[in-house]
Length: 121
Length: 311
Image (tube, rainbow over all chains, first blue to last red; front, side, top):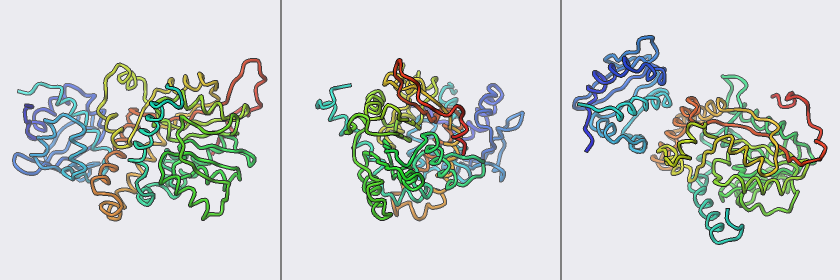
């Protein structure tokens, strides 16, 4: 069974390390995006994938091109599922809500592909 | 490809018909909530970044007519004519006879009803017919167009062979459709299935993205030469973004009213995914103008420049 990765592990540990190691990830997103992961072990983060030094910061940025809202349990399950079909299913069932420009949210796919291709301790 | 009237060929046609119907036989009212006023369910053509979908739709139809050098005396066939946007444009603006074929019963019904109510008489009509089995005599049409349909055709060679047979020797054919860049297509040809492509097939009923060279190879094998190619990928990105905005703005009158909420969300997700795919060169869109070519025959007179294609 796939390991469940928490939102805080992904946004506080994994992503900053990934951005430092692979600047191409930020170039493939090229936007400021926020995530609102609610429920147990959730949190709010904003990824700045535009600046010369891409970063992940706590909180929602009102200037973000889009904000993704999802419960922590659904988020963890989706990350573990590693399939596009699961994300689509969650979106059609309104488990994911996106405010702002939806296509930009889809660019986050590069992060979840990197997550799927990494061994996590 | 099997014999035209073998059981497996008939089964294939039936499969395509059923598959296409799952997507295109949703109510025209639903599509009218997000497409432009002319109900063109394919890439529009933007001459400015801030242009409206309505203007871009007309630009596209005008561009098709210009590239085909459509004349009032022409007999036009539109393969995969949808809700007839180009059929009506051609009849209304050029005055030529325009016939469309589709596999979706609701689209056929829509076009013929519109033609009657707008008093086009026999000038505009649509039929249910498969592109593999074009039931027309040799050299029937002056012009053939196919817009946003090659993505649904597994065997382009059969379609282009048939098109070559029913197109007059001095006729023109215009292919407008999506292709995959080679790096994606190669993955598929190596036997790897991409999850996105499988989801596209599920959503649209059917979907085959070829590489541009495969489309051109099939055209050349069918006896065509390419006169002009234009990459219109950016135009399709702007088009799906406009459709997406319309879907989002009209959510309350679509979701659980015209289609289920899940179907509505599925369309929203696919429009967003297509936008990203065009933006990131995952899928491309092209217009390919061609004519039949024969050895030892004088070339037909054609404009020396692309000026006549300008919008």
